[in-house]
Image 1 (tube, rainbow, N blue to C red):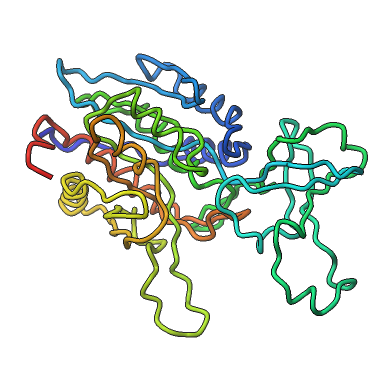
Image 2: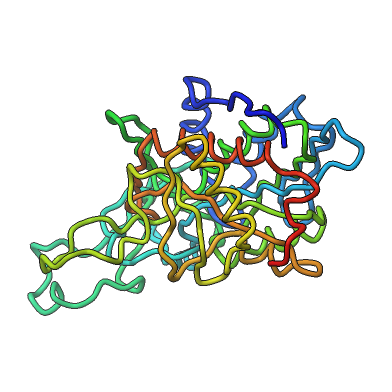
Length: 358
C-alpha cells in the first residue's frame, strides 16, 4: 500500500471546466461538442487517446510499475434531452425524449436546438385559453411542441437534438446547471487523469449513450478489458420533504452528506471488495461518504460488470437534486469529497485488492 498522498482539489480551474462542460450540448448520440472539450482538457496527460466506433473517448495513462493493476474509470458525456421527430411547419416540431424525462416539467422551458444552438421554447396551450378539463389532464409529449419560430424552420432537420438552455452558476455552497449528470463526473475523471496515481494503469472512459441504455460503457469495457472499474456519476437525491408530511425514509442519497457509494441499483450489485475499500479509505482519512440506498436506476457500472468474463465494479456518485430536469443542484463540498475519496482509494489499489473471493 502506498503512503497517503495529497489528493487533487477542486479549485477555480475545475469550476471553470465544469461550467464549460455543463453549458455544452451533448444529448445522447450527439456528444461531439462535449468530446472536443474533454480531448482538449486531457491533452498531454495520457499515453494513448482514441475515439472508438460508438464515440467513446478512451484515454490510458500507464503507471510506473511493470504490472500495475488495470483500473477503469468511466463517466458519461451524454445528457438527457429531446430529438426532433416531425416538422409541422412554421418552426413547430414534434419531438421525443432521449433519456428519462418527465413530460410534466417540459412546458415553457427554453431549449437550444441543433449544432447552432438555435433558441426555442417547448410550447403548451396557455392557461387562459384552454378548458378546465384540459388543464386537469396529464401533460404528454403529444401535447407539446418545440417552437423555434418560422424564420428558423429551415435551419434544423429531423433527428437533431435539443438540450435545455440552462447556464451554469454557483449559488453559495451549491452548483446549479443542466447536465451535471454527468458532467460533474466527467470533470472529476479529467482531474484524476491529470493527477493519476502511479500505482495503477488508469483507463479513462468518457462514455456515450449512458442515458439511453449504458451503451457506450459496454463497448468501452470490452475494449479496455480492465481488472476492476469505478463509475463516476451524479445520483438522484430524494431528500426533499414528502408531499403528505410523513417521514422520508426513501431518500436514496442526500446532498451535503458526501459522495454516495453504491451497494446496488437497478443494474448492478456492486462488488463488495471495492465497496469495502472505498469505505475503509473514507473512514481512515475522515472523508465523508454515504451509502446510496438500493433501488432503481443504474450507472455505467451496470454494463461494465457484465463485460468480458465479468469485471468487478462499483459506482461513486455526487448526490444531486432535480436530475433529468433543466436545472440540477449539487453541493460543492460533496464534489470535493468525492474526488478526494476516489483519488485516495486509487492509491490503495494493488495486486491483492481482489485476491479474496467476492
